[in-house]
Length: 422
Image (cartoon, rainbow, N blue to C red; front, side):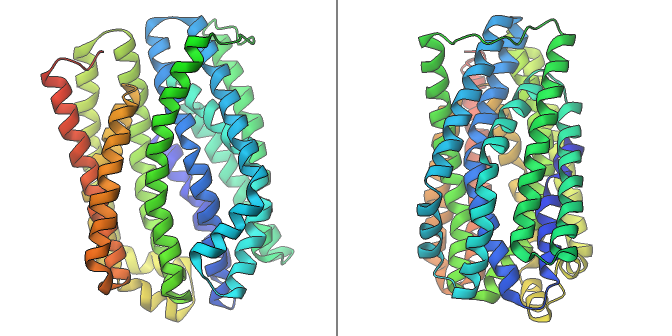
């Protein structure tokens, strides 16, 4: 899972690197704004992947195949409905992007062109999240690895072909990602059927009962609200950065790739612990559940320390790899200390997210995220807004730290009260 998630940021890294070596900063700023807006929407849809993993893992632990199939069907239907809503609302969403960012006309032109193309990958991208959640819940870690690796290789090849070869610019990067998403969906469907067949599960259509729909919608509602608040904070980084100027927006686009590298690697451990904790809960095995929690925290903190050391030693080199625009390089290097600290500061929040997904404790995740967003991000930013971009990175650091602290405290409370298996 770590290997598969490490390849995910390549999508954003290649887009940034290819566009970042074009002649002017507004191309990089445009793809930063457009891709971050799409990422917000698709990351909002990550609620469906998280809920699917937790429910499937618990059904797998219970050895209840009917429940497992009904849960998969319900998640696919919810995912398709969400994708349809995104496409239908896309013209309004482009206007909202322009209003919130207040970016320059040249930047908005590039961002809008990217968004208009990229949004049509929503059905593939969101259903693929459901299928990835199914494979994770079934403890089939190789499946997501194959999907993510092939998808990113296709995206890299098409990025270079469309942007450098055909000179389609930012729109070419969008077409590359759309094609890669649909190839990923086809591969995921094949792999899901293979793993189900090997484990004696018949993936025929089964209409879910009313109780299944109610439980699924309640779980997805809470995780969606949690994801919405998370994306509000990341969106604020992008949109407020745009208000600070083209240079700040471009530099933050480069720097956020550092955080993406950390998040997807840490999520590799979190995804694994989702499946392990979920299966242990389904089997009512408290000892095994706590064992997986301890192991995930150990490896997560070790990996976070390695990331901080790499960013400390090679941070400037990574920035120069992503862009050759001199003013962007100089500006971005001022904020490297925040990126050196973030892996260790944020490790607990990624790991406990995975633990609570496995427990299907969505309400606690929602409440923790709300507190962290309001107190840790927005209140800190309001108190430090005179620091401008440094204030943004301070708020992000406090936000990530408070997420981990609040979830760790809640887990300890549930453990003391012997409520982990409820």
